[in-house]
Length: 225
Image 1 (cartoon, rainbow, N blue to C red):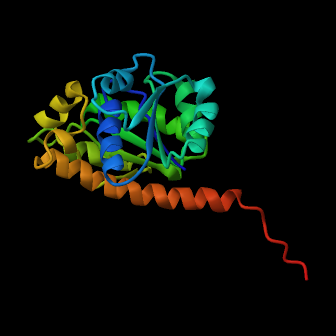
Image 2 (image 1 turned 60 degrees about the vertical axis):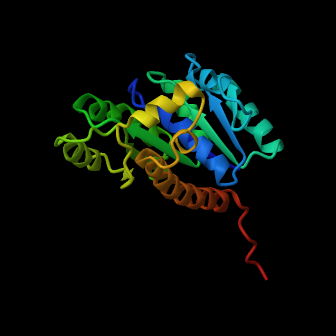
């Protein structure tokens, strides 16, 4: 089972929105998804409550219960577990980071959002997971120089940055109160294409991270003759 964590110490970065859209598309691509909502606001749980289908499964949880929730998901045949973390909670974010194969950091292209990434990167360094993280520019405005400035600032943190960006689009926002992902709500919209492109990038990164994690856990071969 692959494990992805959506982490940002800055509120309003779009973690839940991005996680729900990706979870829906992952199901469409054949994954069995469990979205674990560690945020006390339970936004992902609320989104799931207005869906007309159980998939993807959304589970409310807390950091101390995360290992048990992941074991249960694995036993139930889940192929991809996504963890939606709360902002401003180092403990919860750190637990999720340590459990994850891939850490996704949504960042809005603003000075305050990029500056707040310092705290997230410190958590990655504490868990020795900086190489397993990828930043995603999210809610990108249609015009202006903020995006290029944010990209340059992100490079200084030494983390991977997805070339695939998610623009600030009405269908992406409007799908959420309908309990849908944008690939369901507006499958021909540009926002749907962006989620699909980001999924492809993250899926490849996640698969590679999972392989590295599996090799690290594998017992060393006895080279004695």
